[in-house]
Image 1 (cartoon, rainbow, N blue to C red):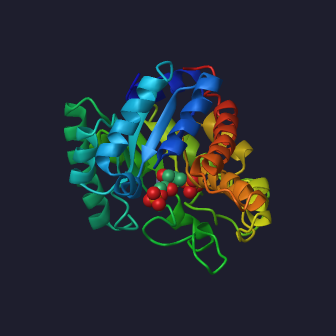
Image 2 (image 1 turned 90 degrees about the horizontal axis):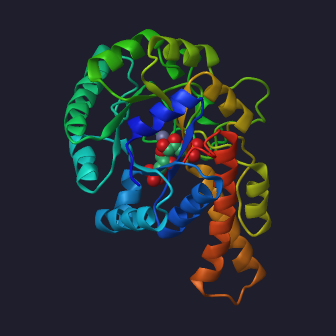
Amino acid sequence: PRITLRQLLDHAAENGYAVPAFNISNMEMGLAIMTAARETDAPVILAASRGARAYAGDVLLARLIDGLVETFPEVPVCMHLDHGNNLATCATAIQHGFTSVMMDGSLLADGTTPAEYAYNRDITARVTEMAHACGVSVEGELGVLGSLETGMGDQEDGHGATEKLSEEQLLTDPEEAERFVRETGVDALAVAMGTSHGAYKFTRQPDGEILAMSVIEEINRRLPDTHLVMHGSSSVPEDLRLLINSYGGDMRPTWGVPVEEIQRGIRSGVRKVNIDTDNRMAMTAGVRRVLSDNPGEFDPRKYLKEGKALMTALCKARFEAFGTAGHA
Ligand code: G3H
Ligand code: 13P
Ligand code: ZN
């Protein structure tokens, strides 16, 4: 069945687990994620970005979700818009059956000036009023998360996004977060807690703490009914990177957020964990392996099947690690 983000994360908070939000842009990714959810008895958040909607087209994407929900009736599914950028993007997602939308009002700004805060608050409050009238949940964002529109992070200069900004710029201010939620009414809040988007988060193997645990705990203390969301949560597995490279790929050394670090975040109140890069890598590794081992192969089902299998394994590992398994 289809459920809202609020329903899903309320249950997660009551039971002390988190739900991964996996990005989806085609049928194979959808099947891989849903198969993992079925096999671990987990609820799931399927997230579609504006890029995914443009790639598949809204009608096909909506029918794909219908098909997945019908094919996997035992899996609770929240269909979520990732990084919506205005009222229209959120409204059309709702028209196409999404049960949750993210209004990312921090996209245009670094959020630090009063005018930028006011813009974010006003647009997010408008989206929340509209979405709640439709029975749809809303995620807002406060703080700077590198690499999405800013182009930070996924660059060719070898520096991870988080290494370019000062600590202060990167972390969400708990007091401002409390005010933002009061003024907008969002169900969930993405906060800057030390991560960034894309594969190139850290140029060295992280030693010790990555996440600003005190910030997470303080926001959670001030906002017990608002679910905390952690973007940029791919772990960028070394084995997948090496697999990609051993079959003709070329990903330079890089590190993501260790799973144990995400588990610490979950213990401090993180309830939604956004993952895209890891699944892109899993799909690519499988496809590369089949094509490289069988240069004469030209049936897309043969290589996509292998990418799907690696992606399912990755999703299952995350459902287990985040405590989502068994909560469908
Ligand atoms: O947060 C961004 C997700 O990884 C989606 O990326 O905009 O390239 O689809 P995309
Ligand atoms: P990653 O790039 O770390 O997978 O983050 C994805 C994300 O935050 C989608 O909103
Ligand atoms: Zn994101």
